[in-house]
Image 1 (tube, helix red, strand yellow):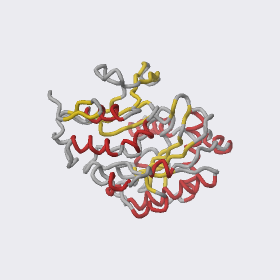
Image 2: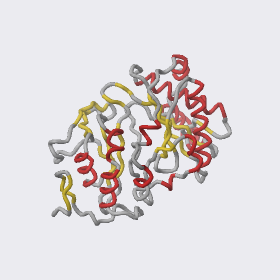
Image 3: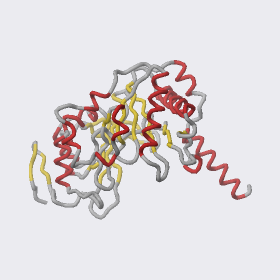
Image 4: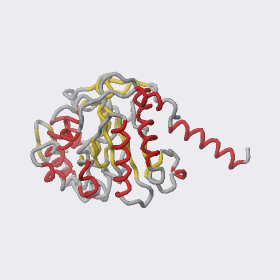
Length: 314
């Protein structure tokens, strides 16, 4: 395979191939985009175990966690025990331009960094999804509920489009809380936001129970990952997860931000870094409340089994 181009010592190949079905973009467009925004996306990735979503011609997208054995030796790594699969996973650390370019050449479209650096959980995250067929304006209103609940708890967050149909609210947290407390605080914020307007928002994990409401997903804690700010998504038109100020959230749609349009909207700054407030400690009462709320995935699993038994007439 010949190189179409070399940047920072990284051979880039097959740049004129279509990126994926519906992208309306080539692999070159992906490489050029990530290179253009590298000074913004790298700070969001640096020092964090990285999972990526890759696309290959004629194959469905797939998540890659383990760094392939053929990866260059200069890519920094971190090895983490995966409890779910009972094995050690060697993740890449995307800390510099040539690592980012190497991933782009591997057709890594989406970048999902861990929510911790070392043993410090750095963010509490809420993922807001609209109901089927629901307008983005519903998500904007629900994000306002999250912001209000955070403010009442003495916390603050920043918001970005998810690159799909919803938004992510990131809340920087001071070092200290373990996984269980961080997850508990996330559940409590979602529950408090739901109580502010139960006709608009829900924490129901089972889709059929959401009744046309915005889903406040509180399960992105600990070992979970969330797509990075500025990361492209494998969606029609190759949209980008893009930071938006709270005051401007009701003036945009996720379709406004793609790998073609996003670089021109950045100017000389880094809006994600500018939007993120300083880390704050989790209030004890928030954590305590969260520990009284069942873990959504576990509760949904048990409820699903109960409903299946009821349908069978057990």
